Image (tube, rainbow, N blue to C red; front, side, top):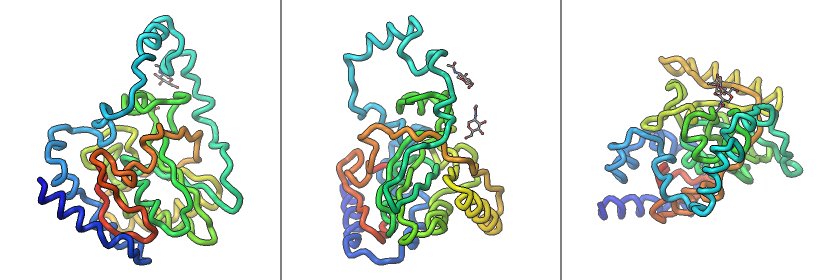
Length: 268
Ligand SMILES: *[C@@H]1O[C@H](CO)[C@@H](O)[C@H](O)[C@H]1NC(C)=O
Ligand SMILES: *[C@@H]1O[C@H](CO)[C@@H](O)[C@H](O)[C@H]1NC(C)=O
């Protein structure tokens, strides 16, 4: 195990002299041999990268009894029927990007690795992971992982269209995951791992649909990616943000340097 770790660590060392060829890393990051090597025990769990680590989440234990009581009484819980009004979560993302910036939003499986891939793109000024496309307002990670809220794990990208085209983001999106597996990326199974492009403008919608057609020509199986308007974006809990860059579960930081093409260990 230690040897494997050392190898993986030395493999990351070229990142800080980044090249400009952003997409080179893709083929090596598509499959997950590093993940399997890194965490052999994971194969025992036929789950969700993110949900598997739920126990590492900082908990606000003192909230629990109150919440349970409130839930039983029908108050307080996001799942209480009166809070299950989907008009807000199904409404548009009405956040405003900073001047000169645009939003793009993608779902391509566990959001940790997807976010890091987009962080490395020149012209991307900021990334955020979150939940979208579901019907619960203010969902928590547990809500999303329960599979009942129909949220997707998404990455919202802030980019400067003068420095990075939407097509560049689309190219990374297609290369980064398998768009032919419904509600699934590898071992991660569930509606929150569905493949989706969530557009903000008619131009993005058009480009997304065209790129899907192009990508379909290169694949034998049918693409199941959904292309829908971006809905309300619920920023995920802070510990999920830039999770892999910060070191993931084991504290091994992964470079977010622009142009870095090191393989991404999606479990940290
Ligand atoms: C919430 O509403 C959706 C439809 O909008 C429904 O499918 C789901 O079962 C509801 N969940 C609860 C817990 O009421
Ligand atoms: C979940 O959301 C997707 C759109 O993102 C929709 O196509 C699907 O029907 C929804 N599923 C349920 C059970 O509401």
